[in-house]
Structures are given as structure tokens and as C-alpha cells.
Image (cartoon, rainbow, N blue to C red):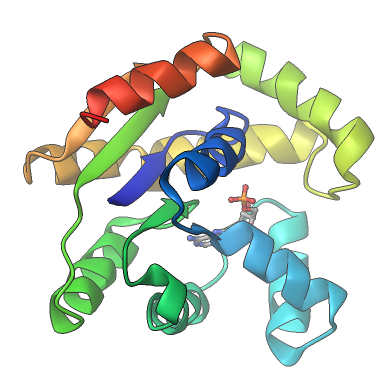
Length: 187
Ligand code: AMP
């Protein structure tokens, strides 16, 4: 099962990805998590990404495309994966299409998780209390929502043209969202 979870920050992509990892035995590929690990480890990539992430902008395609391409080559991705937070731009989606075809892989579905912008701001502000993420504060989350609308939302159409989009209501309780995703992908 090769899935993309698509939706604005705070829609619950990370939460659902973790549940689906357990259910399907395939890894979650979160570019945000990988970048945060690189920041914590103070690698050159982490140092380059930190300021961009802290202000809610997108890290360069070169960096994130490289992360994903390397990660897809690891053995645990052979039976599938759940992409969470990638692709985020049409350019990244095109790069992903090329990567997948060169690796002989095909996407099964793109799950669009819809969410209400006001609820997202309060969800992410609440998450900030536990997560310690410098980009989980009201100003930066609004910026990240703007970036989502401008750069990432067009991916819904991009993947609709490939017949891959399944839409679920990301505002429902976690269990119901999981059920809706499984139903949408026929599992
Ligand atoms: P996330 O954990 O997915 O919300 O990502 C947190 C931040 O990491 C984003 O606001 C971006 O700055 C950066 N990031 C994560 N994934 C990507 C991506 N695919 N393209 C560019 N920047 C990304």
C-alpha cells in the first residue's frame, strides 16, 4: 500500500499515519519529522532548514526530494509506505512521480484530509503545549495555512487527474477518520 496523506497542518495526518503504520505494517515517511531530527542532530541539512521551518516557509525542493528519494530506497519501504507532509508543491509531486517510476513503484491512493481553518489554529496551538515545536504558535500556524492553500492545495487537482484522490473529513474523531480512510482505500 503506497499512500500519500494530504491535508493542512493540524488536520491529523501524523496521528492517522501512526495508526495506519500499525494496521498495515508499513513505515510513515514524514519529511517534517526527518527535518526535525536533522535539526536536533545539528547536521548541515538541519542547520539549513531550521530558520525556514521556524517561520513556516517551505524548505527547498532539493533538500526534501533528496530525503524522500533516499528514504524510499530503504528496505522497509519495499512493501509500501505512508507519505506524510510530502509532496507539498506541484514541483515535489512531479519529482515524486519521476522517483516512483524510476524505482518501479506506483501510488495506490492520495487521501485528502479536509479541515476547518479556525479549528486547525486552535488544534495546533494546543499541540504546541506538548510538542515543543517552535513553528506551533498562532502567527506561524497562520503562515503555514497560507502556504498550504497557495502551494499544497493544488495537489488535490493534480492527483485527481490521476484518479487517486479519496477525501475524508479530518475533523471527525480519530477512530472515525481511521475507519473512513480504510474504507476509502478499500481495506
Ligand atoms: P510538518 O511536520 O509536515 O508540518 O512540517 C513542518 C515544517 O517542515 C514545514 O512547515 C516546512 O517548513 C518543513 N517541511 C516539511 N515537509 C516539507 C516539504 N515536503 N517541503 C518543504 N518543506 C517541508
